[in-house]
Image (tube, rainbow, N blue to C red):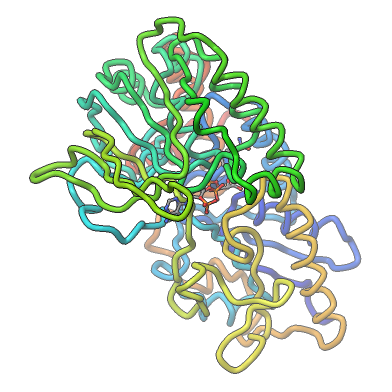
Length: 447
Ligand code: NAP
């Protein structure tokens, strides 16, 4: 090859970072990787999706940082592909582009009343408590008494747990101080987590369920009648050890006497959301509760509702996109356009396979994509169309406040210092202006 392999990765979450590592750890490729990130801060859903009280999972940021600090990897933060720079522009200036931009939008139910005030996507709530720059600081006020969470995946458990955490527990995390204040002042007393199918089909894991059951601040209530299984559920259970562990945990919870905690978290199963009721704001959710072959309507009062029914990706300009699945059509990572595989364009992570799996699932996923890229390159060297030179310069990002790795390190330092001042380990800066101010602060003595 006449020049080193140059690759742009779009997205700095785990899948993008794992692609960057795979490309740079193979010395024979002589790859240079620029990781574009639309936010001023890296790590995608590890920073803005993993629950703040799951610090052990968040500690993965240390290994992602090592990848992004590699001498042949560059972090190009605060640059949105699709608006600040076009995907076609990237494709002209790099030999290959890997889309690893995730799935960050909450899915909708498509039922009446979904836009009533008080009905939110869990994704928005997660973004807000995680201090995501796109989530308005004052987005949530939590003056409701009763809440409903629709969906029984791990995100549903995350949001329910965050709604009952005490101020002390929250101050041990890195959530912004105003988030601690709003959550601590919340008047929500009752949270109902509702699954549309029976408990044998719950998507959450027994570990996360056990964590919910161990909370001091809330009683978890399970109705034993919900745990009587039909044949279909028995068969699902027989085939799935993880579901058996979940059911055993739910049974243990159903046997427990409530301790009279200030708040309660109740599970309801086999209830399909049908309609949100209310005139000026949501007052209740109407479900159709399955009774074998028939069903009956059940209204659960709620002034605050989170739909936690999964994520979907969003379309970037010039990017092939399947609206139905919210993913990029691809074959083992090679992006497929209307005329077949798009030369030099690949996908990895949630935008490739949909919002499933845990962080570790992105390793084999990234490896499949990078293998496809390397195989293509060896079969016929990938060629960028534009003249050689530094793409970041050539793409005309001059007017944009690009946050490089030093800028991110400055943000990181500012968040630790801010935390120390508040007697906390670290506190996230929420709004974009503060993040950009911190990134450009003249504190470059560290290195
Ligand atoms: P998820 O696991 O796919 O769960 C989505 C839930 O929404 C399911 O219960 C699903 O029910 C329900 N649902 C979908 N459409 C619905 C509809 N129209 N009406 C009612 N319910 C509906 O999604 P998630 O909770 O957003 O999690 C996303 C991924 O992140 C998962 O892989 C999860 O394990 C992972 N995650 C992991 C952790 C952790 O490891 N601690 C934490 C958070 C997230 P059906 O099954 O009936 O479709």
